[in-house]
Image 1: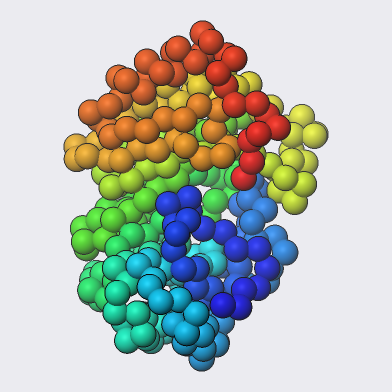
Image 2: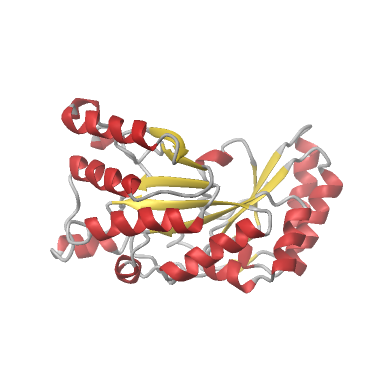
Length: 290
């Protein structure tokens, strides 16, 4: 496989074959994100992608899962995506799922029929970075999508038989907007009824524009205990009407949480309360990473 630049994938795609169909991210303006700052967005030539798949077939005897990257590969037209998906079906009949990154605008540009076509050709899950359910936080971090657009996109994914995995970021509102960020993210989880929700904790490297805001005093980061308090408030407001797998087990998190909402909410809140009173169990800063 040929890759250009750093490659990122969700933790749950650790054992998937990564297929780079786009380079970078179409938006690439979120102030907290540095993942694609060294790349100028472009769509890879489909023939190159096909060559990579053919090479991978010669290298690997069995590939159960694939993941299409970079940042929002769903921006490709169905015409181009179907060439890739059809070739995967031809070369890798054993592959059970082909998942993909997308953003809310990508999803909303697809028709129901197009999403169903992707589903019928192996797309099982679309990963969406919501980051926050609060519109002011989304505006400040230059997300490029509103709360309402993200909720509509997630519902559209789920309504068309594909699972949505939605990511939020603890601490993204700083000390000024932590409460609004927590409450509105929790109620957003309630409204959108995604199959999966993942909670990361804010970690910045030198390429993230938000770092300059912090240095200038325009934003103040939460302490580890305040992050847990924010997470507790988010969970208190998260009441989806169907089972939602909730994970906060990323390398950035201070405390690992695993459970289903709403069933395991009380147990996860109890763990947060215990951690806030026993701070020695929190992950050390030097161990946290993107």
